[in-house]
Amino acid sequence: MKQSVKRKHAVFLLYISEFHEKEEMEEQAELYFKCNAEEEALKNSESEDGINDTGAAEEIKAKFYAVREKLGIIDAMISSVSDGWKIDRMGRIDLAIMRMAVFEIFFDETPSPVAINEAVILAKRYGGDDSSSVFINGILGRLERNRQSNE
Image 1 (cartoon, one colour):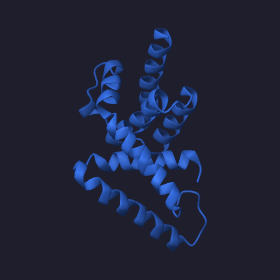
Image 2 (image 1 turned 180 degrees about the vertical axis):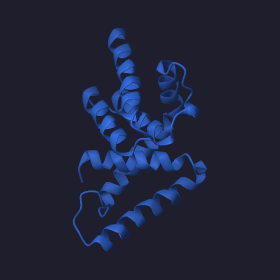
Image 3 (image 1 turned 30 degrees about the vertical axis):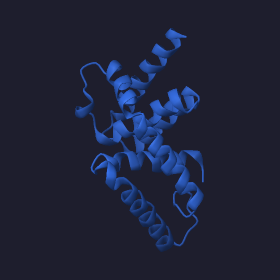
């Protein structure tokens, strides 16, 4: 499974976690993977979006939990550059996409251009509205400029 597909599924888990208690997320993750596997079986295809590999599912869950562990820091970073936008006013899917990108840039050693580009692609496809990708690109761009000026 491609990294971009794993990233997408981890973002979806982050999104789902906004609607469930922390204690419920293991069960919710299992349901998410089961539903995706069943959907894949119904399509009877070899789509790269399906989750039919236990190893991939474990990688996705590990990344999801790693992001969740750093949420306080990640949200503070996003808030520091989101003038006029509080975290609780942001679209949940947009926020999940940004959280993943911030984690990848600052904690997972993913090159910034890759993480930002992947976030913009996800925002264009799944974001709240047409401006989601612009908003996300702006926030991530500010964080990256701040990081470069501090180095």
